[in-house]
Image (tube, rainbow, N blue to C red; front, side):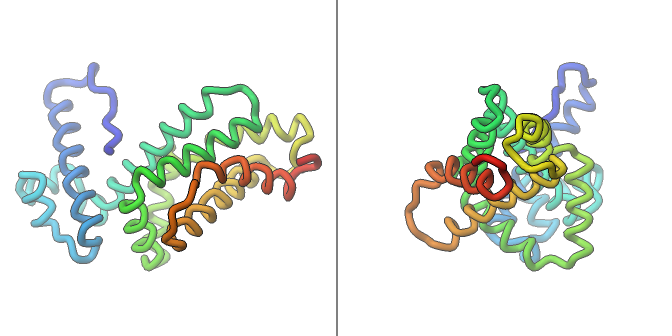
Length: 211
């Protein structure tokens, strides 16, 4: 799950640090999914990752920092999957379908994990949510950023209204997320991937000049 950076140019000490951090993130992710943020202690994370609590503080500021690292790792996984999906075509409309498909496919693969994190984050204080948002923005793993150049092309071709591409990317991502919530809350088996072209069609009908 974790997004491990390229290590071929790192020193042995740096490679070991990357490995240790990834081990902590993997162990913490399992505990957070099983027990939740509040019910998981640093001591339990240390034991699950087979390090001491002191070693954890060599790489993280505390439990919140580890939790954010887990979320960031999840976002990196989805970002990379979406980026690969978009690279498989040059057609901007098909790119939207591929993005939605990657979004839905990732959600199906990580259903239990996402349900836990989405539920918990909904109850977090605003300040905590803002710290997480700022961290994800700094990391560069916000998936909607991949769609900005796609909407630039759609605007130039007259497919969508003359609204800022970043705004349209955020709205489109929100529509995908809404379908995921409906899927999760329904508790029913559903061909989520078949909804990808539906999301695109409805978005273009709402934002587009010709959908």
